[in-house]
Length: 124
Image (tube, rainbow, N blue to C red; front, side, top):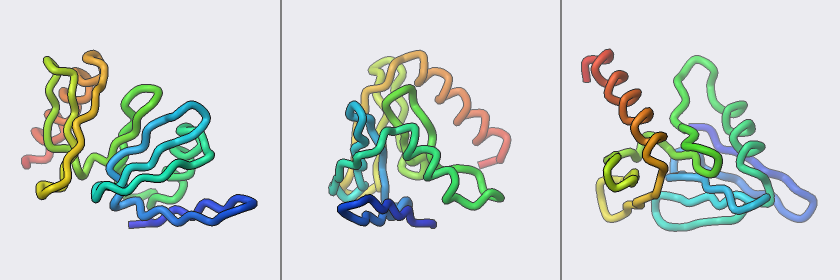
């Protein structure tokens, strides 16, 4: 899995994309939350960071990150539950780390349908 190197005037940050659970917009900043619980705040907007991630990924493989509205990007490898009724999406490493994120109902409905279709077509 590729890593992302963010170099600014004052610091250099290397992000291991495989371990990122989600990215959340915080105004003009982005909070990066790792599945193990560590977090960091980047001085980049979510859209800019999304472009950097897309450019760093191999073009021949499907992306593991999914945009969930204006303020959230999730790592689909950690997806364990979608509850449309409760408007919650759960990301977990199937161990001790889990995050329950609030997502609008209409986004969850569409995403749930797309995931179900992807599993049905792949035979998994």
